[in-house]
Image (tube, rainbow, N blue to C red; front, top):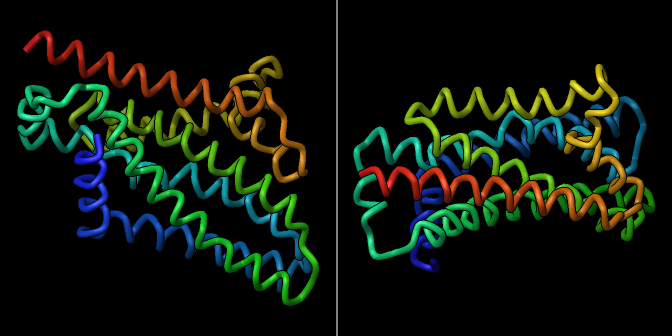
Amino acid sequence: MLAIIKKELKSYLLSPVGYIFIGLFLLIFSIFFYISIFQSRIINFEYLFYNGATILTFVTPVLTMRMFSEERKNGTEQLLLTSPRSITSIVLGKFIAAAIIMLITELCTLMYFVILDYFGNPSLEVAISTLLGFFLLSLAYISFGMFASSITENQIVASVLTIGVFLAMWFLPNIVSILEVFSLIYKFESFPSGMVSVSEIITFVSFTLLFILLTIIVLQRRKSVK
């Protein structure tokens, strides 16, 4: 699995993909930071991540859409499926590599905390809970984006499917309240409030594991057919 992680990290860092993701996220995050601090006069670090969750909804496909779609399109999927490495190690390797890129991105947002700490007194405890919740949200998003990439060879289709499902989980609870249980954004909202709930953590972890497992099943079935 370590070899897969290294290979995927190199593909992110030796190509524009990883830098586009990090740069795009921080650029939009900085715009929201400017609007919140200098126009709205809001100096809460955790407040920024409500906007960060919105950004994540649209930029996650930059990381995930090519994971397996590119392999199928380029005809290298057969080599991947017939390699000595297990399907599980391949999927987990790709997932962990994307999670590392996301973690680097999240660590970069600490510079905003430092800026706010200079002008005010943001709560470190709330900041930690916010970062934890945001990372769990990002892992859930990555797992679904990876699954979407595994079921199509078209990266654009994988991207549109990923964003469409994220938006559906975001807005459908506003129409049918019972669907709040499926809204990852709704589950995330407690973390910036400083309330770390075990049920929310379990929801994020379960969602992530579910789509990692589904990705493994999809690839395993494709391998058995071939």
